[in-house]
Image 1: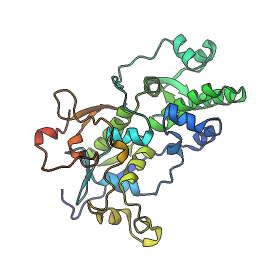
Image 2: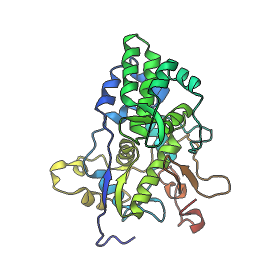
Image 3: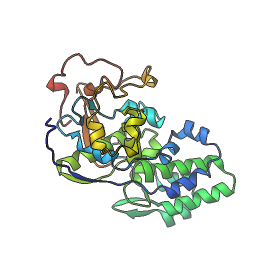
Image 4: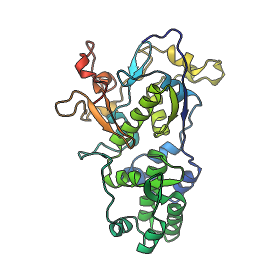
Length: 311
């Protein structure tokens, strides 16, 4: 990749409006238990994101190999890293494919703790997908919180996190895709698919709006950056592009020991890469390029057959 003069592409990274979600946290009586049951979703609300860092990251996306290629190293989000950051393991089940059907209305109303009349009056369609407004679901959280129904509060709060934070689509709306993924309990493959798909196709188009879980992508990238005060010094006068380009492979935090006992998903059947189905479409990623991130050495350049561009 040529790192001489490069054109800078304009990307919009849409951050979810999380003020209302932050208010919901106070309704959760047992945050530690919530983390154990639903993952580290609350931590995504408390991130202090440095402006311009992710805009710089996406400039380095390599559409040929589906990773971020820097002058001295390559990085790519992986299933294992996303699972570790979210504290949600990748389940041994078929992930979201987009063809799932919601349960029958009576069953869905029951699992979401709604009366049939409430369900019928508030189940609506936006952007071609059925779902519920965030305002309605937040009202349900407030009601059950006032009744001391902590388990139901956690359940509905987690659903709101899925719809507004993990899988944002229409502002203020929790659509059927988010509901299906929430009920499946296996969000990580879809989250990673959304990340790659959105960045990849915006890169091919030369810019645009990236729609995925921005706080999770930010948390992933920061986990690999140096922790030194020099790198993060706001008064240095250096742009993020200058700081990142100056890093070498020895500066990167490559591997988390948390992954020591995690089974690595590095292929899919006879295919040497991994297909990811996001809420917007399918794309592949190439775990062979992430061997170093996952604690394994890379001795030689991988054969091209292991670096399929499209699954």
